[in-house]
Image 1 (cartoon, rainbow, N blue to C red):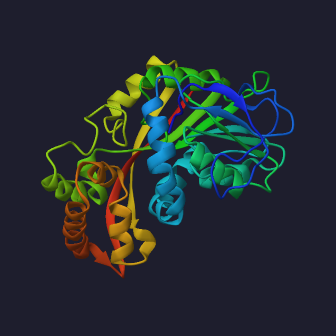
Image 2 (cartoon, rainbow, N blue to C red; image 1 turned 180 degrees about the vertical axis):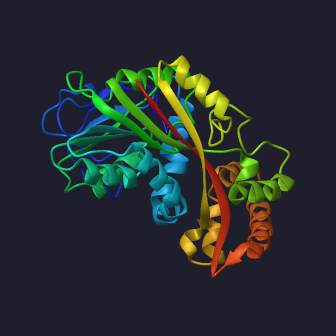
Length: 324
């Protein structure tokens, strides 16, 4: 999830209640601050709408339900990490790092002689990430816009850039991947995972179809607009990457079970479903009583997909790799 262009600010205060101040290495994301956090203020720039959404609405929900989302995405993130194949000593950027699950996995792979910088649009999620990685000396985080901001140190570009579902939200994808390439050394590589079409991901298309009966307003962005399914078309992905200067683009389909609610039963699955993008959009459009009726209708539909006490659907993604 990209962040808006920052009006750079340096602070030693936590920006999210409940999370302690954390430290970041000097000169990350262009900072020259000493001895405290560097936080990019997301009040301007081409992705301001995304910055607001992922900091104020989706970010807190993700932090609260991190275990559920991580379990849901574990197969897909694992496939993308395998495609990245990070090696000891490498320097890697984790774009749209969220609460640091993949960042920490990459840190394990690169070891103490390498480093990982996690970048995200969401101040909320970055503060959670810093808490989770507080004891990891080879990990740092920055609130930054991968479309416009320098993330890697100017004198130490990354060997690779990675993302687990974090690159579909840019207002200008070609500009974003051009900027990401500028943060990666010549000959470096890119690996990410993105969703195939909504219709091939019933975990969201089924609840969304039910929610649509409760509102005349759209619940998901149109095709190719910034949003979770912006990269559903592999030929568009290829065009974006080649237009941004990436070479040897490979796009492979990958399928795996998608478990809702961390396998904790129907109630948890319904709760997670109503906190996806369509559910959050519906919440803004209808009153509480209507939202509750929609949740009950979603519950009825999800109950038909219980498998071993968990709500499970097939999930379909693209695993994308490229080189500079």
